[in-house]
Length: 355
Image (cartoon, rainbow, N blue to C red; front, side):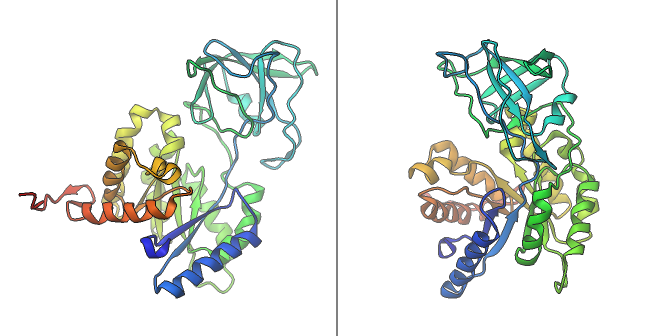
């Protein structure tokens, strides 16, 4: 991939283990030597995993439709922020049921609070915060307000989003702290999930200092902007972090779109680009870039336009897929063409020589 134009590889610490990560990094270093190129390693900390647990479905029902109800309970057996068992509480009612892997979030929700499941494919609102469960505990009853006309399957391990709800969660879980021992020693860049406040940046910096060892400088930190509060606090995050080590921002458009709304995303990503340009902070344009090309081998027209717009950022991130090598080559070509037309947010309008 490095010979096709890629100059940074992201390792998602939510998957695999240090032994596997080391093998990935060894492949990257070998490719650098063979191709005479330079490739950075970015390791993305998993952060709090707010997911659905086990799913129970009513008899003869496999899909959730608008108007259906979902019973949301608290997943059992916590270890820090990590759930080691996601067994849902059996329910006698004729509703779909799942649980939340970060149970304390349920205590923050009130009636009419929106709850989105699976990147917003299932949108619900809370209709009851004191719904009785068979074991005497209380769960939340959600009513589905949006779903495909054909219905959506409610699955385990899908993301839960809570727009308009401030979640006072520690962005570094017990797993993250364990992973940092490896990450601090091997990564040039650290992706910081769920960062929302300057105090979150300070926490990671302190943990890195404790693991600095023989390294002379901290790895660069990329703050993933994926919540409304992170957008609001972005100036403070930049001021606090950028003066202490190399710092960048990722527009995590997947979670951010669910949190603030797809219409709002279009202008917020522009605001983030403007703000970071003024502060001389590099930006990563992420989520579903050339997604159809990466997965199916052919891009949509809209994806090509989106990729061209990404030239205004310093970096563009592609997700993995069977056609990733072809996607990197095409993205490199698009960005090379567009860089003569665009300097960050300022159009250059070079001659096209079309006639």
